[in-house]
Every structure is written in C-alpha cells, then in structure tokens.
Amino acid sequence: MTEQTNGVATLYIDGAWVPAADGATRTIHCPADGSTVGVVSEASAADTERAIAAARRAFDAGQWSATPAAQRGDLLLAVADAMKERKDEFARAEALDTGKRLVEAEGDMDDIMGCFRYFGKIADQHPGRLVDTGDPTVISRVVNEPVGVCGMITPWNFPLLQASWKIAPAIAAGDTFILKPAELTPHTAILIMDVLDKLGLPAGVGNLVLGAGATAGAPLSSHPDVDLVSFTGGLVTGRTIAQTAAQTIKKVALELGGKNPNVVFADADFDAAVDNALNAGFLDSGLVCSAGTRLIVQDTIAERFVDELVRRAADIRLGGPFDEAAQTGPLISAAHRNKVTDYVERGVAAGARLRVGGSWGGDELKDGFFYTPTVLDQCDWDNPAVVEEGFGPVITVETFSTEAEAVEIANHTEYGLAGAVWTSDSGTANRVSRALRHGTIWINDYHPYVPQAEWGGFKNSGIGRELGPSGLGEYVEAKHIYENTEPAVSGWFPQQNGE
Image (cartoon, rainbow, N blue to C red; front, side, top):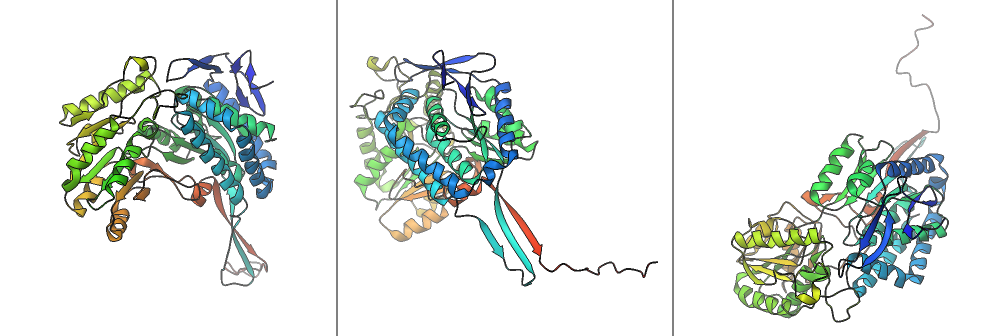
C-alpha cells in the first residue's frame, strides 16, 4: 500500500500506510486562496494508540536501539540527500499547506536538510564518559541510552522544520517515535515518512498520525507507554500537555513561543536596524515564534526610526506562494486572522496608535487569509498587544532612555525565547545580551540560527532545548554503570561465628 488510498493520504503505522480506522478524512486548503491541496486521513485516539503500541514493540525488541549509532547517523545523512533530490516537491507541498512564499519554503528545506546532516554527523559522538573514582579496582561509566518511545506534536508555521528538530535527534539516539503534525499542514510530514520508509527505517520505529490535537494528539501526553512528549506550540496547550504528562512522570520538552524584544540603541546602524526590524516582525507574516514583535527603541531616535519603519511597512506586498512579486503571505486560517484582528483592536483600545496596517488587504486578496503589516506606536508595557503573543504581522513600539531601562522593559514579559540588541558599542552589546532573560540573543542581527547551537526559552517559553548537543540530550537517558573488578566481602555486617 502507498501513502495514498483512493486519493486520500494515509497514516503511517508500524511500517505500513493505513487509513484511519473509522475512515475519517480532512480536506486541506491553501490559506492563500482557499484552493484544495489534498485529502488526508483523520486519526482518532484509537489510531494514535495503535501507533504507540507499534513504537513500544519496536523499542522493546531492542534491535533498533542496538543498531550502531554511526549507522543511525548514516540514515540521517541519507534523509538529507533524499530531500535534496526531492527539494522542489517538499517546498511546493510546504508552500501550499502554509501559504508561505515558495522561496521561504525552499529556504526552510535547506535548513531541514542541515538539521538532518548535523544530527547524522554527531550521532556516534556522545557515547558517555568514564568516571575516575580514585579506586583502580573500579570501572565507573556513564552511558547514554535512548529515552524510549517519543511523542512529537508540531505546529503549522514551520511544519517540517519543527518536526525535523525532533525526528533527527530521536533517530540519532535510537528512540522510536510517533509524529503528530498540525492538522492544517500535514503534507511534508507525509513526505518525510515516505523518505524514511523508502530508506528502510524498521517497522514501528517511526509512525505518523494526522488529525486534531484534542483527539489524535492527546494520547501522546497521557499514555503510559510514551516515555517523552515533545511539543512546539502555544502556551495554553503546552501547559495542558505538561499537566497531563505529569500523571505518568514522562519527560517533557516544550517550546511555547515568545514575546521577543528587539532593542535598538541610538548609536546603532540606522539603516541596518530599520531593515532588520522589518524582517524581525514581518518575515513569514510574523508567524515565527521568535519574531521580534516588540520594538524597543531609544527615545532620541524613536520618531525618525518609527516613521521610516512605517513608510517601508506600507510598501510590503502581500501575495500567494507562487506570486513572485509577493514579499510575504497569508495567515493560516480565518480563525487565526480573527484572533490577530481582535488583538490589534484591543491594543488600540488600550492606547496604542495604529500607524500602518490593521486591515485584511484589498479585493485581490479576498480569497485568502491576509493581514497587512501593522505597526502600533506609543505602547505601554501593559498594553495587551505588548503582553500577549499575537502571532501575526504586528510590531508594537516602546521607548527607553537608559540602558537599564531598556533591559527592564525587554525583560518585562512572561516569555523568554529570543531577543536582539542593536548598538555600535561592544560593551553595551555584551552587557545587554547577558542581562536579557531570553534563550537566544542576536547582536546587530535578527533571526539566523544554526543547528549546532541550542534553541529554547526561559520562563513561559518552555522547558528543554532543541538543536545542538543539548537537543540530542533531550532524547537520551544517562545511566551510571559501576563495576567492581575485584569483588570481596564488605564486612559491614560481620558473621557471628555461626550463632
């Protein structure tokens, strides 16, 4: 059986492409124009439980975890090579599901291949360590073993990128997994499982269930046979997952978004800072967990800076995935656009000044879920548009006078995922970057990341790290093995001469 049955893309469970047990399906539409992308199987909780059982059997059998780490790494390198051959197919599928521009989807595919290559190369580089006990008769080792069965729940903004951050280290570590992508953007998850299947991933090691989080995803955090659940998404859902997972004391990794400060000092390169403030807030329609949606600019340049930002934001062209003149795309759904609309309206009601944007665009965009790049000026730090993660193309503007004030404003958030500081003074850059309580800090830049460096947040932005050595560490358990090479009677409880 292939990944499609009667034109319906199916689930992948225990090495086979299978429809949902109850036959349910979901039609996927492109958010840029409402066109039909495809029809996919809609898993129920029972389907996910079948996938969990398959992953449990495959892990407990022991063959996969006993596969040499270098061999698992070679598989990951082969995944990257296979993706390169099918890059156009992957990028087009991602663009259609998300509505993002094709060039952005192509860039995502490059990043995904880089992730698989990174974990492929380090798969056999973390065997553990010897511990010096000071006793030559003792061999003390700390070994890294796979955590077991992993549940992976991924979002719709970077569907395959976020999945790769979980799949690649899990395979490198020797785990088995069940992937549950966002129900609105399933097609690249299907494609990556097709690649793994064709490369000979053993049955049950990787499984794919499609559907809504409340049904298809829920067992991944509640089922006792799942050893780890990794979730990328919103704070409210993340809290629910953490609470549910606590009932079975499973490991939890959460990346829950952010409200990220972009701090601009008066001595920054003005043109570079303005240009990157646009990128920080409006790249991918602002649908980026690390988007720099809080612009915090020094008061002496604030008026000039914001005027230029507004002028350039007004020129940003919206369009669909294959509109070569477009500079950014739509939001994911009507419901999400309504949330962004409400978010902006509440921000204005609380005193923010709407400088540009705040609309759904012109008639030529009426078939898609577009929202124009928006700047809200003169914001206080308790404005709901400053406090809440709007997850859309909206930048709020706050001002500061001193370095200490800049740090205080930037850290005044329940989140702590990312942030940036713009200045020509290296001392200022060093002090502020160290003082900001966020997991990634850029200095005179915004958005770049590398798979070799850890990614994750402080505070309500989550638990754990993805990417880098720590990203692999989330998918292993450390075990201490203490071997006495000259066993002897301890004498702690002496014999009583046969009495």
